[in-house]
Length: 341
Image (cartoon, rainbow, N blue to C red; front, side, top):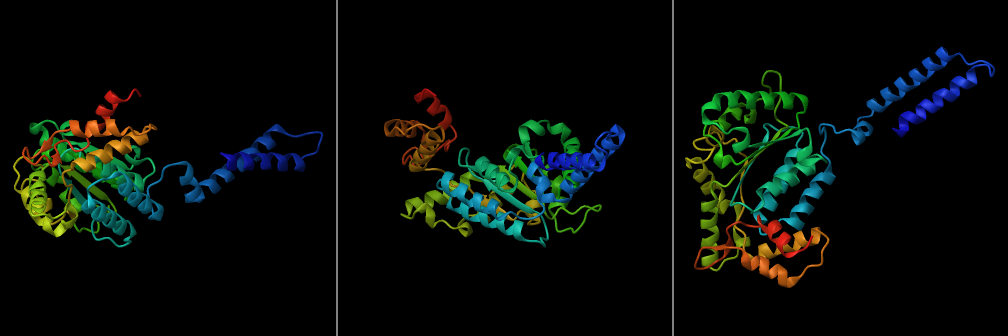
């Protein structure tokens, strides 16, 4: 570090000046250098902002630049999701600015594959910690990977509680992301209910600064049903408000036997702050995804290729062909085929 090297050089110079020119005792000089190094290190650690510039630290205060980056990234890279953009930014920004939160923030993101759920969770992580999903304070669970066997559900419950308890003890502003909630064994997620509740302390630990994000395909049918009703009645998707869908979505997820939220106490006790619907993507949104991906790879956009990729996607319902059944998920693979990267 520049700071520590400077302190060592200064200590060496001082020691040389204080000794006779003809004799510098090695032991005395060594002690002087060691003392200067210790002093520099102590000063280095005593300034958290300076220390955290070089080493990742648990977030102690809200960085307004992070909220601005969250808004900017969603505006530029998330298409057709006006509800997500509005709700997620307000929820995350408001929670991070709240110095007296009564419970952790819990967001449940729902929609078909390829509509942007994983992308949004990634952007939220990056808005809080520079390393994003690679941060040691961000913890991601995938149901089919981390909790694959139904007979082991009690073991998973104990492990999950221990993991959350241990990591929040280290960093109160920990972020936990649970992917594939629709494939999680029913009842498992209820084991974290105490951590999401309105407790000030649990065994001496406060969970009120933590953030929990759940990702699921469950409820996608209900979201599509609402979107189609608006389309068939001549209204735009931007006319859809959160109140048009949130209650029906939470009920649908709660009663879905194939969902990890089936009859979950997290829903029953109103511990999920927002059910965030990801609307199915239309043809124009797929083209936007293709354009952004081409540009991100540093290539000039070929409008003919862009249109061909969007045309190759499959759309539903079969008669109207309005929504992409894979969202933007296969755009990368199709670009690899058309472009010689």
